[in-house]
Image (tube, rainbow, N blue to C red; front, side, top):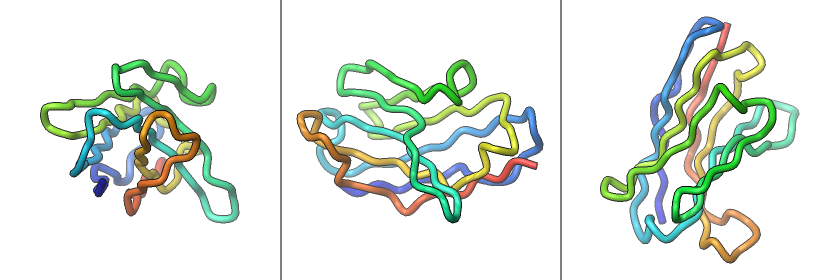
Length: 115
């Protein structure tokens, strides 16, 4: 599975961005997730979605971010609304076979900056 993120950029606080992650390979049967990392901090999970569309979110994005997937187009999305400066980070999409614990496929990341 190869993953390529896009959609990052700079936005003012309160604004919105939609990240996309184009996947190749056996996409529809995989569990997918969005993660983020800032310099000097550990990577943290943002949102996940399984192969049937069940989602989970970190508390700090609940009610603001929405993860979704289009299995026909092999694209994973992260709609980010009401962005805060603390959302500034490099955002990564990741994939795994759902019975595995760890994500083993990662994209190169897309930068989100909120000012």
